Image (cartoon, rainbow, N blue to C red; front, side):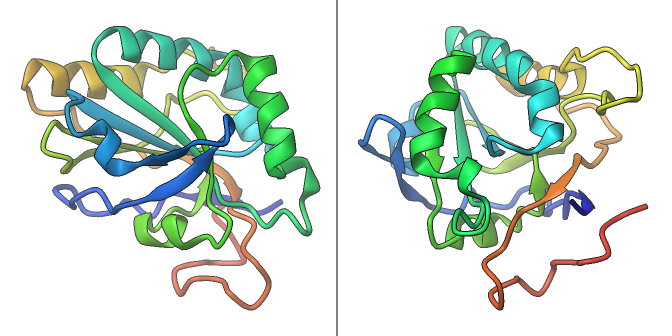
Length: 197
């Protein structure tokens, strides 16, 4: 495991397109969220301890967002040949066990993770109603073992500000997690195998 920080994609970046298979075997695309007040994209997986630390709170957060007309989508981009716990079959079980009501998509060729410059699990992006990036950063300051309660404050404040038509509070702190498990030899140029301190 390499502890990795978000790349902090520039604010205002248009949401990169995607069309990926959901755990229910249906294809979900960016266009499906055209009418959403905001769109939260979470790069996540099943086995990462940083994701497990937040998983139950993510399920609650997803339901809250959906009640506000905010779309949430989870995307797993890990190399399942070397990390079989993150396979599509296991994603089905994870979604059921955690109670995820949002789509949980499989990015088999890792092209969507590259398009978003996703670096870690979990990595969070919030796009406004025009699908322009308004927030990229942490769920909150809680990490495995740091004894800070999981609240989702940072992400929640960002979503609420966007829905209200306000600026997202600053500063935006990068998410920290495990590095995305890139297919060997296909790591993106921004991947830092040394991770972050």
